[in-house]
Each structure stands twice: as C-alpha cells, then as structure tokens.
Amino acid sequence: MSASIRWSISDRLGADRFATDKATHLKLADPAICRTCALKPCIAVCPAEVYHWEQDRLRINYENCLELGACRIACHAIGARALVWDFPAGGRGVRYRYG
Ligand code: SF4
Image (cartoon, rainbow, N blue to C red; front, side, top):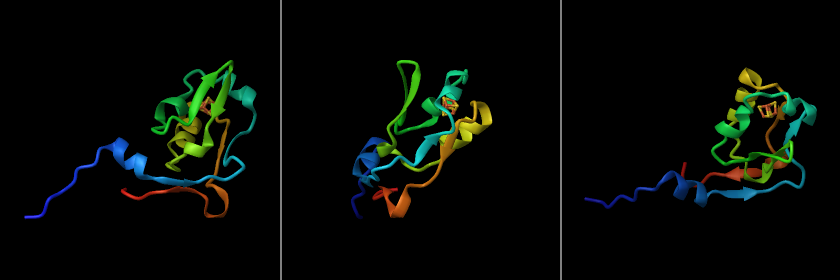
C-alpha cells in the first residue's frame, strides 16, 4: 500500500509559482465606476485576495492573480462592470504545481 499525502488548499496555493509581469493584466475601465458598485463582488469571490477597498478606491494586487476569471464574471453579473480582465502577457502569470 502506498502512502498518500493530503495537501490543504493553502498548501497547494503556496506551492504555486508566479512569473509576474511588470504591467497589470487586471484593469478598470474607469476607477470611479467602482465607487458606484454596491456589492463589490470582486473582493468576495477572489480566493487569492487580489482586490481590496482602501481609501475610497479599489486596489488590485494583480501579482497574486490565479487567473480563475471569477472576478470578471462577478463584476459583470452583479457588479458595476468596470473590470477589464485579460490573461497576463507573454506566458507570464501563475504556474500551478499541484492543481
Ligand atoms: S465588482 Fe467590478 S465594478 Fe465592482 S468594485 Fe469590483 S471591479 Fe469595481
């Protein structure tokens, strides 16, 4: 019988590697739109905590993006549709190692 290793979600995310781009791939059509967004669902749906509301504006830590796209769906489904989402350029971004 072989031994199995059980990894928690935190362990798996901690094993990922990132090739960070110098420019963000997560942009806002207009940052002022986010002030009108009542629910700000991008903050709640992102498991990597990329989005934070600070000093009356949305902060985006794009370096931690897992490229799930959940923020894009949430923003355009129940948010104020400010988010312009794309993959990082040139093969940069997250490199999953353990699913
Ligand atoms: S869900 Fe969209 S519009 Fe609302 S705060 Fe987030 S990025 Fe801005």
